[in-house]
Length: 316
Image 1 (cartoon, one colour):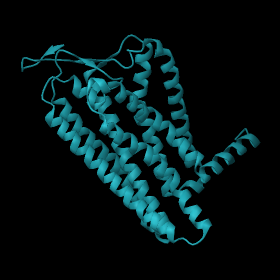
Image 2 (cartoon, helix red, strand yellow):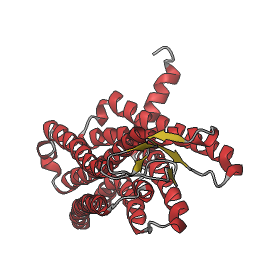
Image 3 (tube, one colour):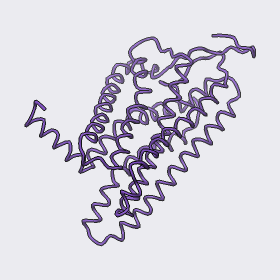
Image 4 (spheres, helix red, strand yellow):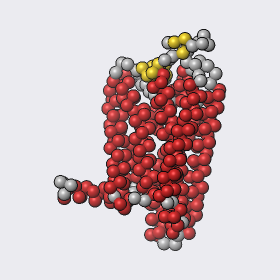
């Protein structure tokens, strides 16, 4: 504890409680989360390698998908290693700067992924509704600008919220009832007025969620109208298959975000928030590569071909 000029003590470190209220489950939870994290890394790295090594997948859709996999690896890696650490060691301490850095990167990657899913919805809209203009409307230059824009926007939004947290004081209790520096858990540990920070977070979160969902819903409403007009069953099936994987990922991601919005910030809901955050930061990054590989014909064919080539030509 250190003393600042306002005669209030402020912490220079936090204690993460994690799932310490369930000591008998620590080893089991460690093995489960380690397995999920390993699958997340292997699955998303696999998606990136498959896309980069197959010329057939060098299209805007798979360009965005590769960046989605990068984001899944990044924001899962922000929280999971620390969670694994506090499950097996007694030292549950995280420095104040480390906590703020963890929040900044976690928030930045989540907002970036939210924007990336909206960009991917626009890509599917152009592919289905204007297929003849697809290569012109979604050019490589535009793809690069859209991706750069999502990363920049995510970083700016996260920096703004993080700065609002840095203005808070954390006196007396330095315990965070979470396995990571999640926003509501940090706010609960503060002893100063959090109104400005909460207002900032609410405006930015609502803006991102509303804009992202508006782009997604508008894109898929247009896609549904176009699909209905397709006369052939084959064309209908192909149009639907191009969107099914992305729509599944969107439903899981935004469904979890909206669920976390609805959970009240109280002691009785801390466990629920932790479980929902586990699903959001650990499960979703694992599910995305499974969704896109199991439901995507092009990816499955490319993986099958690469495996066949390795079996026939192991020296390659």
